[in-house]
Length: 508
Image 1 (cartoon, rainbow, N blue to C red):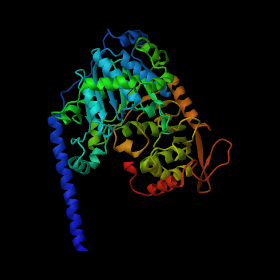
Image 2: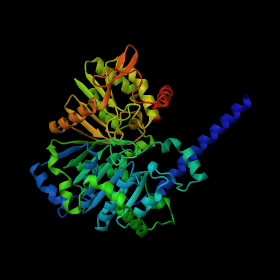
Image 3: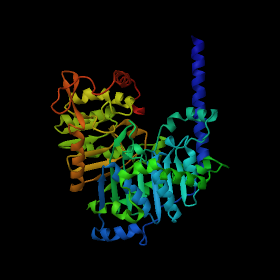
Image 4: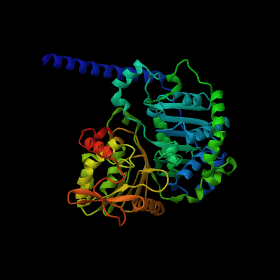
């Protein structure tokens, strides 16, 4: 038995030493391979967006403009129009940029912009780029496009060395850049819950999950805050140029262009694009819907520092910015989140609000629609405790058409403060991932957000979860309640039950 202890301690020592050496080596590599610093190109007066926004901004001096964008096809049209109208710069920060129809459509628009002389900075999280490097290396070959990867694995080829690096860097590599941000010419920005991929724009029709999601379109001085955060990430040393990860290797941009153009012209793809009513370049201005911008008081653009991915001091992290909003609740707190794992601190905060007389309401995914039953297993551990304290919970239900899973992330405090962003109400967003978001108090934006919450709670969209004694019960409209999680399988229920009792909630 003592021999096994010796071997176990030796193996642990090897792992710890390997992790330390790997982290030290990664730090030296990052210092050598970091790209040159770059900053935003300030807005001017000679581009299409300048002509569209300068008169409006003059009528609303020192005010920010914003519009909520819940509809999937419109979110795609706006992004496409922002690329088509770009005249100076595109600064793009995304957790996911899939190589599918929407990803290729927007990649083509970005290439077209670069061909016109637009400078493009594309910052992508490496966890979803790994194994798909050729696409992004091809884009990076354009002289006006630079692609950087956040917190990347150095060994890009599949093999033993990459496996070792992943093993020794498992915890650091688990910290991801989860934000989503699109900035055009320093005039317009879009952030929220949507990544770039077909599921986020309602384009999946093969039984996969489409997402009900939410973006916010921004204009005015708030753009300076978004640009400053982008520059902080771009120049952080955690964002490495993809070309430095592939020394001596190139990918042909010309060949990539041919493949991309051929794909977008195929009859199948053109048929899928018809219902979206995507704008042509000459009509891109109208597609933006700038007349819907709510111009009012200043917005607050929130974001985690990139150093959060190093596990640095929590100073300036999103939870510190959001906690005062939650604690300031007097009458009503509404939370919209696809992944709900509040942790012991979050549980305590919500219970205190409910006991203090506030109406606390959470809308999240039901087990049948959740794309991660492991996370749902962690959530169910908190559910009964919250219901016992009077917290109201709604879980998404199936609707007509393709499966749609809630992916919006928003909060509404006393009907007077709102938040929209990438921040899930879970421990991963709080302690591991870097997140972005916007807080606002404009009454018209708040009314728009309230309507989104009301729609998410409606009987055609969600089950109301309550207690029947000590057992949870799900009710939808006037239908009889059920004690089994609706539309779910026995296997999913078993997996979620087991996960709920494991001490791994922080990593989900």
